[in-house]
Amino acid sequence: MLFRRRLLAAPLVATTAALPLPFLSRAHAATTLRLHTLVTSPHPYNTAAEWFGEELARRTNGALRSTLFPSAQLGTDRAVLDEMRLGTIDLMISTTNNAAAQLPAYNVFSLAYLFPDYQSFRRALRPAGPIVQRIQALYDERRLGLVLLGFMLGGTRNLSAVRPVRNLEDLRGLKMRVPPSPAVARQWQALGTLPVTVNWAEVYTAVQTGVAQALESSLSGYLSERFFEVAPHLSLTRHEIQVGHFTASARSLGRLAEPQRTVLRAVAAEAMEVGTRAGIEADETVLQRVRTEFAGRIHVHEPDREAFARVLAPLHEELASSYQARDLLELVRAALRNA
Image 1: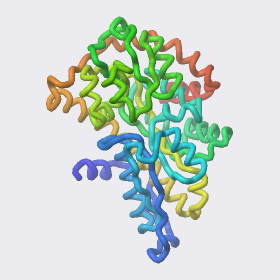
Image 2: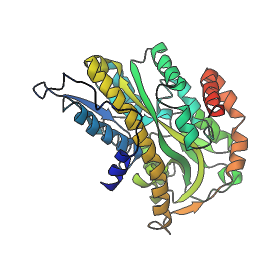
Image 3: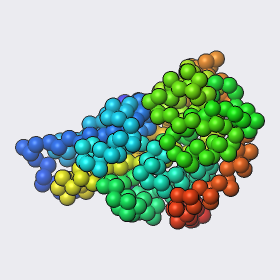
Image 4: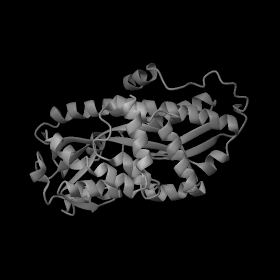
């Protein structure tokens, strides 16, 4: 409860508290939306999703609700995105690299060391900014039937493995689990690993059985999914500030009245800031727990991040071009220059 109060006490992106909403009579049947996440609580994605559901119900006097289905209860991200085109699943919060098959430009957000810090991330991916507008245009061009509600910071992504990783030599030949993102696989290959694509729900078993020897994930995911049991060596590579997207089914939104859509969009934008703050705080909390509560079970290493970044920097142009997303990369760079 204390954490929730702190989140609510901070300034948010926008508010609709004063909006006149004549459609909010309790006499009307409530509309309940299904919201998918891939992760298990505690996780910033679920924090944002839960806050969104509570606030949406409050501001609509219960006329519009959302129910969170965490831990891939509704399926993999890929399957859920297909369902959303049909309007059978309404909302999702997840990492952009899992949506790269539907939108190849999302691979840009998986470029290692793209965002130098949290504040540059916030400024570049601000609500209604040029990058958000460009992604929505790509959704429309590809006829995905999706509406982008915003981006959030899901924490930093780091390497964990069955053995210590401190330098490039330690990575050589390591069987590395990667998500279904060619950009991620290409980068880990450049670092000397042998990438193996494994769905998130199967990662623990893959490492346990030796199909993979290492993985990269958010710190929250590392702890909540108990990956430390099979990959006890945590290397703080901080190679990626994880971009989480909040996306809606266009068909689902189309079934709502315009005032309801207005409230939903505003609450979603605020939920992204709630989630971003949760992502930053979660990283700090997890690291503290790792070094105290899990001391002796998790071995923390500070790798040579500068060496990793030097190898990967030349790939930015190559990978962005391969996904016809140079314009998106330039938008990010412009946002960072103007920060």
